[in-house]
Length: 158
Picture (cartoon, rainbow, N blue to C red):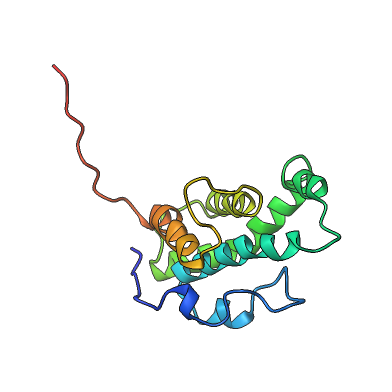
């Protein structure tokens, strides 16, 4: 089961925006010091904020990015899954995710979520706010990996 650790909002922690020149890699301390839930939330915040940083550069090519994240995404997707696999496997060992979690499938699903956070603006959420992105991931990704939750029973019609 996932254990939720109370921590300050991401906007109150240092730094949520990557320093210049570090696009493409998260600081090692983000990975080493955090629980699984925090790791996934930070990855999502990093990706959502990277889009803003990259899009402001003069060399940014929207068409090339779209191709990379759709038609030509197989290699990038595989690399993301391979990167996420050890974290998912470790989270299984620590009980932060359910024991029957399919690591490859969960890694691919989360990688696809990261692609979407990078490429698709939200019509309902402020994806420029790191706390909103982090809670979005906690609520829908992390808790989905953690295990079965009691679901309300649907009324049976006679």
